[in-house]
Length: 218
Image 1 (cartoon, rainbow, N blue to C red):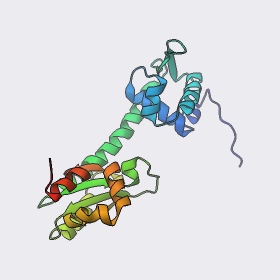
Image 2: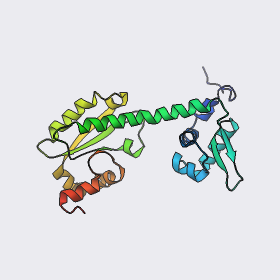
Image 3: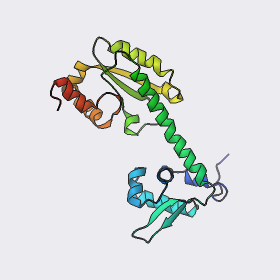
Image 4: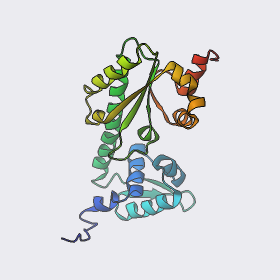
């Protein structure tokens, strides 16, 4: 059966959530809770200005967004008078809480390792916010050589107890402190990515940790 166009009046969410740009702009407005200008939405939604303006026009036409001010100082906010505004806010808040629950669970699992590892980071596409539905959640564990293998296996086991279905996609890898010390020379591209993209679960950020391991922390 061929797909047919749906009614925008009856099913506005088909259109409001039917593109990445509109979904991101709607999310940014819902989580902000107040008035936002286009530059603010560009930063919050991580969408280019042309796409933001196009999304705002569509969302305003659907009655989900209201504007205030003139052409040069126009502000936008979620239309509180629309009956969908409350549920829209809630679904985006729950979406944010879903990720926070996973991150907190991974952090707690890493903290419970003993003796405590040197550091644990989220890295890769999930840390860069570029992951796809099938992407792994990459976790890097840094520890001394004596405990690394045991820590990696224990963290993998503990992650199975994290109360989030997303935790099953965690992929734990390990690196000794000595490997981290030589990483900038051995794999400069990987080191550059770690410096730029990690989300710390425990321990220090890569640059600070490297300085400490070298003995030149300031």
